Length: 51
Image (cartoon, rainbow, N blue to C red; front, top):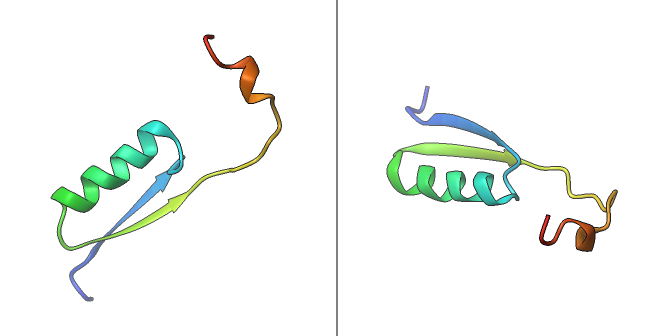
């Protein structure tokens, strides 16, 4: 065991997930962060603006 805690973040490319990754990397030490997200274009982004 190398003493590193592993944190798995789903939605890591989104607003909440990306901020969670940043805060975790700043405050939890030592830590290994594994982030995953689904970067697809299934919906028109412009339809979400102002929703």
